[in-house]
Image (cartoon, rainbow, N blue to C red; front, side, top):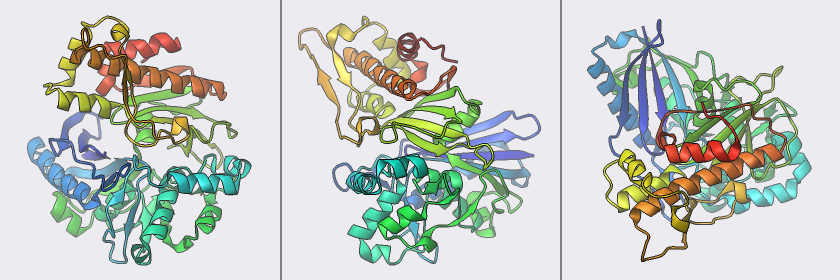
Length: 430
């Protein structure tokens, strides 16, 4: 028997096929082969068509099953990881009413800041563990204010993973973990943050029914089976935002354990059992995958919007063949990139700087000595220093860090990047 896992990212859909008895990886697949585009109808907006995610899941699932030459009926469980903080809204037929407003969209910054000021720091800190910020709830309020005709047609709002689970099973559900990503979970009442919904004037009935993230969430429907190549034997048994899921994959489940990832965005994710935080505007707090009423484990997520996307920008604009090639070239440049500095921002509002839009900057460029390869090294160093800034921010806010674990992918494949972080934080990176 087999399990299939989907990672619904903003760059692509990643699919893994796993043998259940041994945990052995049978196959991996990425769909599409090139990175998906992020639509930006206006400056600092970021949108994607949620049905495009579904199309890629359907195509990719058929390919991975065919490539593996297995009987599809033997795939019995499905797990979902997904890009966090996105907003998908559907009508009563379950069809999206507009493109999804995804995680790096900055249009709701002012809405969240106003809510934070009016609700007050103490209430937000004690109940939401966050400022409402630029999260899903604030994005929904933006739709209400700016697209009232669309808002009136909403049956349910959801996160990206909730939408794909719905397409697979026909069951429109969410989780307390997901609602915490949307700043719509009240940790004091251990229920939906109806106070924030009321403040935004959003009807409570738009919230989906809540399920646990480790549970039977529905079998694949006949329609979804035809579309994906799975069978109705398969059941969705797990869903989580990508960063809590990454922490789970790295066995980050106890206080003091920290996960780091450097994908399109960069993330430091620390697990803690504390429930009082100072930096609720700069650091996000979510119910971790193993959060329960009796064991309220919180994931402290520090995000850098611009991380791998900056390295990708360099790769595309300098026509490099691969990131590995860029890493090799960067290693030929001395430490410090001969005074060239690349500030690693430019992909939306940066929460660690109070949701300011900073943009990316190249500093100290000397046209007589600096080359594209200097930029590669300066980017790796700049992003690494941003990570270090974030780790120090967590430490100052009483987060104990015992171990830092990272997946062997993306920027952590660069010795320059990983060594810079390890040296400046005095931490071993596993």
